[in-house]
Every structure is written in C-alpha cells, then in structure tokens.
Length: 292
Image 1 (cartoon, rainbow, N blue to C red):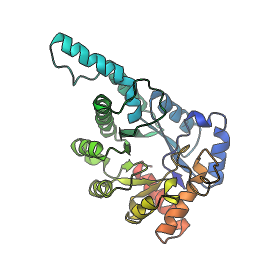
Image 2 (cartoon, rainbow, N blue to C red):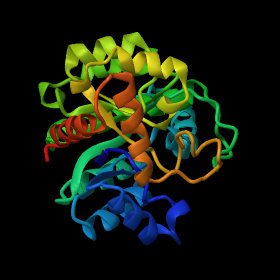
Image 3 (tube, helix red, strand yellow):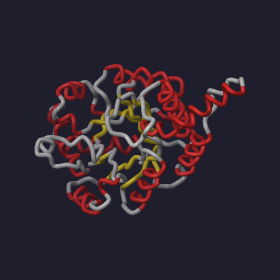
C-alpha cells in the first residue's frame, strides 16, 4: 500500500517514530510521502525520507502558516500609505526568503512534490499565531503563497499536493489562472472535500483525489467516493489526524500509516471491489502522481 500523505515529520511522533514506521512496514505499507507544512517540517520530512527506502518528501508552506507573515503584510501596507504610493502587491521579504528556502529544498533527490499548499478559510480554535484571524489580509497572503508555490512546482517539474478547506471559491480560480500542463496527472486534492465542483475540476484537469480515514464513518464522503473513478483515487492517512473507524471509536490516537489499510478496505467495499485490487490500483496511481 502507498500512504500518499502522512505527517511523520510532526512532533507527535518524536518518541515513537521508529515503532510507527515498523508497524507501517509490517502492515504492508511500502511507500509513503511526507508533506511539509512550513520550513522546519519540510526539512524534517527530507531527513526522515533519506533514511528509508520508499519514503519521499514534499516541501511547502501550508496556508494556515500564512499567519506567520501577517505582521509583515500590515507593515508593508502602512509603509505604502505613509510614502503615498501603492505598494500593496509587493511581497514582504520574509515571505520571499521562505519561498526561496522551499525552492532550494526542491533540489533534494528525495523531494517529489510541492506541498502541502493551498487555501484555508476554516476557523481553527487552537493556533500558535497571536494575530490569527480569517480576514482579507490573511487570505491575501495565502493566495500569494499558493501562486508562488504552484510556480515552483511547474518550474522544477514537481508534483503538487493541494490543501483546500472551506475555500473552493478561492482555490479554483487560482488553479485555473496558474495551471500548466506539467501539473496534469501530477496534482492531488489532498483529503478532498465531498464537493462535485472539485470533482468536475479534477476530471477536467486530470487531478487525483486523496481519500482518508473519514471515509470509514462520513456518509457524505462515502457517497462522494462512489462517484469517483478508481483511476483517480489515492489513499492517505493524513497521520496523525483523521483516525479511521473502528479505531476512532476506540480512541486509539494518534493515526499512523499502518492504518491506511482501513481506508483501502472501505474503498474496496464502496466500489464493490477486492482489497487486493484497490491496493494495487491506488499504489499505481500514487506512483504516477509522484513520478515514481
């Protein structure tokens, strides 16, 4: 099996990483992509991938971490007004520096994708950012980050791992205007929301759809997955998040890549197929997605 989205680089696994990896391999997970969400986690993803055959990294800045740059955006706008010129479209140096660092990481042989990147309007109750608020300034910097990182994927012939949460009307226009044929067949809507607009876009531009543990209990997601050709599906855990059933009810947190088998089993049931066939097809899909 191929867990195409698993955050082994998160602190949750700091003390248990070796055991988690051992259980994944024992469960039949032979390939894993570890996405970054900021500079630090992107570097950690590479560090882990370097040590294990069949493990790969994606590097990028997650839209939630756009909050890191809010003070720089505010200062940029203030300086523009004081000088009497419109400098609002200029990207702050802190953003440029981080994008440059992501670009440098793309040269590593274990890096197969830019991600996870995208748009996010969800109001998170817990965040480390004091200035966090889902407002126009926050969304503005998310959009700038997304456009810059899509351009990097195109420039360096890397795959693209997209995060979208409650922001369909933001992300689809950006993808439309930034699209390049190099991204066709090498882009995924990670943990895709059950939305026919997203599915229509994915079919038109040849994107993959990532399916996670919520398919084992979310009826809307189950009906959505039935609408998707299996040739478009990849499986993922998004560990340590989205624990599948029955483990969710048993509170066996955190999620881990070994549990991708529950996703495969549910997809097989929904598609009236065998576990072996779903495992094989989603493995092949994942390899195509990431040019492996």
